[in-house]
Structures are given as C-alpha cells and as structure tokens.
Length: 238
Image (tube, rainbow, N blue to C red; front, side):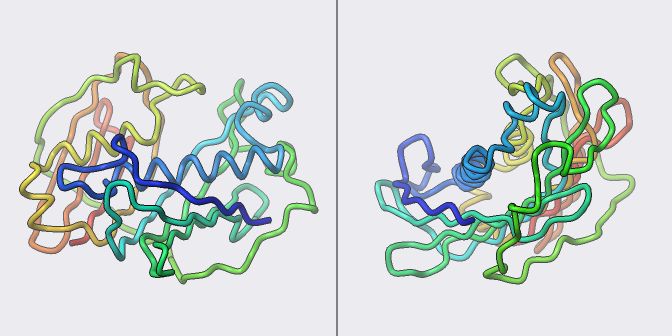
C-alpha cells in the first residue's frame, strides 16, 4: 500500500528564507509515516491500546534535492520498503509539481514492549502477511558511523513541550536541538544535502542532554548524550 498526498508549504513549515525548512521536511516524513500506519491499523495508538507496545524510530536518513518555497505545493508518497521480524523500513518520496525530487527519506522503526522496553516482533503488533513491502524508488542505505571525543558545545533540558504521546522526547525535538547549533547565515551558506540520525536511546522530561559537535567543511557530527551515554547520533553532509 502507498499513501499519496499533496501538501502546501505553510508558514509553520517555512525557514528564514521562505522555503520548506529541514524541520518541515522531517515533520512531513513523520506525519506521512504515522498516517500510513493508521491506514494499516498498526499506528502508535493501536499498538499502545491493543498490544501494550509503542513504536520508535531507530534510524532516519533524508537526502535533499530541490527547494520548494512558501505556499508551493508538493507531492508526498509513503510506503513500507522492507519488513523483517523486528523492524519496518518506511520510504517517503517527495516531488514538486514538475515531478522533480524534493527530498527522499528512509526511516527504520521497531516496536517496544511498554512493560519490558524490549523489542517486539512486528507480527505481535498487527503487522501480518497482508502488509507487504513496495519497491524502493531510490537507493538509500543507512551508514555506519561513530565518533569519539567530540567537543562539548552546550546543554539542553527536555521540557514538557518536547514530549510525545509515548512520554519520551519526540523525534522532531532532537532535530531542533541539532539544527539550533547553527546560525541562520550558516544554514544559508552551507545548504544541507543529507542528514542521518541514529536514535540510540530514549530521553524524558527534565533530562539534561549534552550537545557535542565536530565540524568539518563538508560533514558535521553531532551527538546528544545523557549521563555520558549517546541518545542521538547525527551526521550532516553539506
């Protein structure tokens, strides 16, 4: 099954230069995936109420191709691109009205048991044989990256508005923490070509996260860690 919808770049999705922001892209990805899961009856609320589980994103990789401006429309196609015993990969492909690619995302997700916090087989949370993967539109592979001894930059505190319905920090909030390490002019001078995020651990309200960052001309590494343990690992390509 493919979810196809048309969106318009709203004011809340726009950046300082009147185009679709990186946050707006990630928000569109999250909304498309959760809407598709709702259509398939495997969404977060169903997992919680029916199966005593909740879904988490494990990895997220987005490649950016073309900018769309405020009030412009773009097309979103979302589908499951692979399925295994314990995870699903979701692909989100977006194009402008000229059918040119805007961005392409791949997200790996898995379900955790609410009581034990252990990974559940997807078959135990409603993913039956009727849910079959679609052929990917683009070849997107997750990277294996790790960094040690990154310089400490700042510290952020998880607040109530950062928390989602699973009572942990929402994925988009981590991206805000990451992007806030750049100035408006930096993001304009070095347009982001690719972002990959590994969600290593959860964080919760009132947690303090240390932000570590190493910058190079073409690639930055950012880690958000709690009590010296990584919560988020991120690599950004320019």
